[in-house]
Length: 400
Figure (cartoon, rainbow, N blue to C red):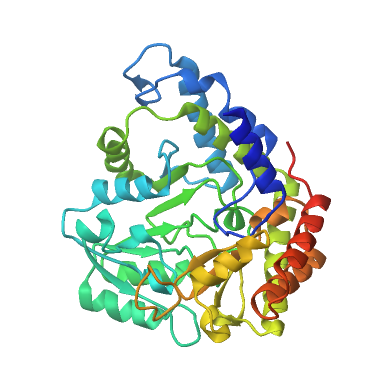
């Protein structure tokens, strides 16, 4: 096993990770993940456990809940926090199970337009257990809020879902909240990708406009792989029961500890500086790619990611992904609007959280953009580009 851990460390150090949903957890977060909390079962919630020996587990979970309130400035006592979900998909599943009946209508963003599988795609539980209808982006590549409103009035969903996994522009939670309220729907804001930007005040906050907010903790928050659900008090009991015992057994206390460390780090001034650099880097990379001839969805980015349509270059997403990986650039294939199938995507999704965590700035983003262009447009020799990638990576090693 040690040799596999060493191999993965080497791979990460020698490649440029541009997958927007990946980041680099700090040594302190990784230390918490390997703490003795990994040994303890703690089924239930603070003060109501099904195993003895959980007094400190209660302290831990309560402390991390309080950290969530501090990071997101939740002074209103009406908000309740659950830090037990194992990851984003189970968290969304628990929200649906707790608040919806089978075959209720949900309105979410189409996967091919930037949404997430759990927002009602037919291959998942969310698209099979519920009646899912989808909104998308307009010809400008931005969410068509008029279409959302029209669909909400037509289909009368029980829940409206905002948030995305491949949308490069700011989401207007105020408008989404107003639309949901106008048709009597619950509003779930899935901010998994942009939670760090929201915490830093660099993206509109869903609080006050959504009834439930779900976020994963490993993306822009730079924590371990986990999730947080924040909900209005009158909804929290139903959600808590759906998390446990509805979907999960005992919470992973070592993960909750890691989330706590990440939230402590998120209160430091350097965190906001980091988030601002993520956005600056994304803009610099997008501008470099656009100048090189890439077709970017919506023409650019407001956040940490961008989506490039490979059809303009005579490529598809899988082919472009493979060409980039061979030179040490890791960016994932992704659907673009009007793709006939999510299994044959035409785009690649590119983001800056991980490379920014390594200390790279605007100068390096321009260099990375040129390396991507050299690979996909200029078709320069693989070895030549790979050596340039490794040289750049060597200047910014991952902290151990």
